[in-house]
Image 1: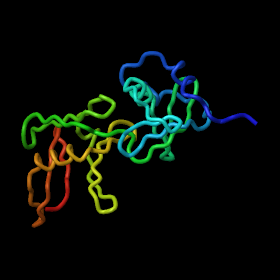
Image 2: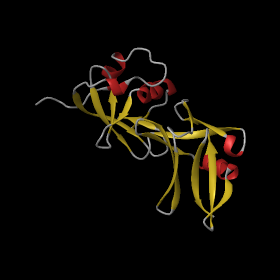
Image 3: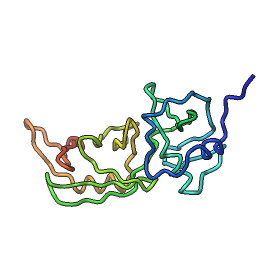
Length: 185
């Protein structure tokens, strides 16, 4: 019986030097099983139960991360595709920079992978709750999302403006021409 586990070294050797996300949407390699990589809900990456401490290695893996149609996550290279475990969102937005005000505001988020994302219509913010707690999320790319860290969420609340729609007050936030609703006041 063939072992369906693939080791990280095989993935690394087939990648080369990428700057930013790889074009994983163009690749359709065979599925080669699961690899023991887990992204914890706090955005830390683990391999074989050990924390991946090298940011460059985490960034390399993040550059070939893809969310499949069934909601699962895979690392994809031109030669192979391996499944990994993601506890919540695969990324965490650790900082936000705000330029402008009101409807002219632009919010640029920095992720734990050092990637930056401008919140806009293609990269919307979503404000849900889980277990009674805020669960704010930014769409990064192709079904991949970043959980907003607590301090980033509080910054957004400070930037938000109270709006009244049909007698209901809610917090609204704008970025790059897109409007996001943080919830009722």
